[in-house]
Length: 114
Image 1 (cartoon, rainbow, N blue to C red):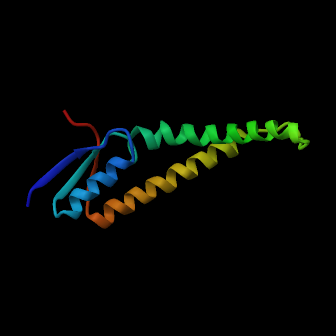
Image 2: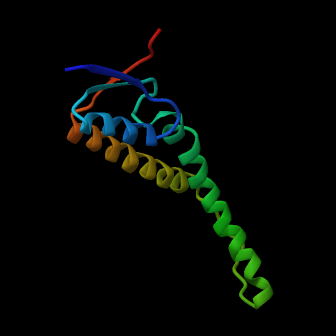
Image 3: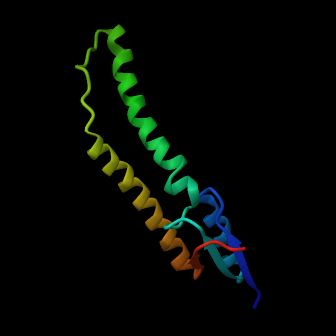
C-alpha cells in the first residue's frame, strides 16, 4: 500500500481532504507544524479571530437597534471569559479533527519537514 504524506497548511479543511485519501484506501500521514491539528487557521488565525469578531458584532448590533427604541446599557467585557469561550470553540474543533483522523486511521506527526 502506498504511503501518502500530507502537510497541513492553513485550514481545517485540509484534514477533511486528507481523510478522502484515507477513504480511498491510502495510508495517510499528516505533518502538522502547530501544537494541535488544524493549522494556523484553527489554532491562531481565522477561527480565533472570527470568534472575537462575532462578539464585537453582537455589541455593534445592540447599539444599532437604538434607532428602534431598544436601548441596552454599555457592555462590560470580561476578557477572561471571552478568551475562555474562544478556547472552548478551538478545542471543540480540534477534538473533532482528532476524532476524524482516528476514525480514518490518519497518523499525525507534529513538527516541520525539510
